[in-house]
Length: 326
Image 1 (cartoon, rainbow, N blue to C red):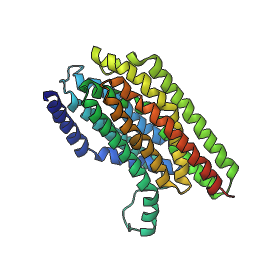
Image 2: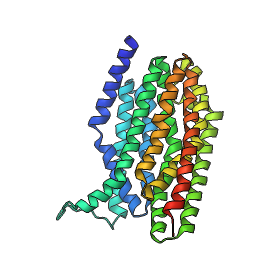
Image 3: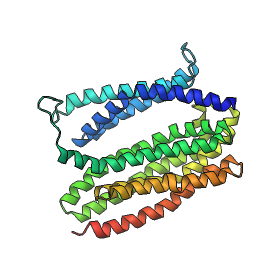
Image 4: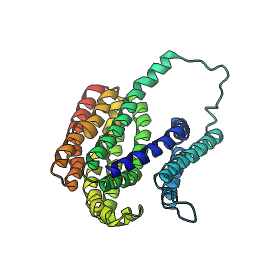
């Protein structure tokens, strides 16, 4: 009970800091999208990557009090996160001002256009749902793990930090793929649309195979980045090896989701995410947790992705057949 109270206290501290200081996150996202909208995806990557790298560098320094700084624990992790987000925001702002001359920031004469707002929401709401689903998944998995051992929640937290570096390039690829497919749908060039879909799937698979290889062959090295204890190593090494088996399938599902989104099936795209991370994953994880064996919970990830990828490819095939009739 004391351990659970400690987790609640630390979680409250973390959430309070990242929520109050969230303007850095939202500012970074705005300028990231503005850079992407004018084709400057490399600059967008620089702003996002700089913040993420700084976050990873600051995490051990602030958490464990390196270089003479005080040991701050979870508060340090929260500060590392918001500092990384704020730096990414400043970099994104400066890159936008210098290179995005097509979209100057001017508030004079600004007024709302409901037609444009509706178009934004038609694309944005499915994306909001997908992000929300991921948050619910994290909450659910952590709740299940806490019932067995709090060390497992620390392992999952470390894994989630590591997997962000694997998934980040795929999400970047996804962001680039959406306008490319959209342009060619508008140009009624079915051949190029199919080629971009194939290129996206191949690229995502290659990235995910690299992430899979790292977690299969170097799990101990990766966990040591978080100063993992012996108990954390015992739970964490099989966790990274098992969960990473889902990477290739997850990458394909993400790309397929973007294809569905640009063909006007945004809510179907969101349903794939729900299928992967809620409808299958959480019930499986809960059932496996009833055995009392933590390692079985990790198997819920590859199993849910395997089922979801069949669902995804079925939807992709029907979408190409019905939505690309030109």
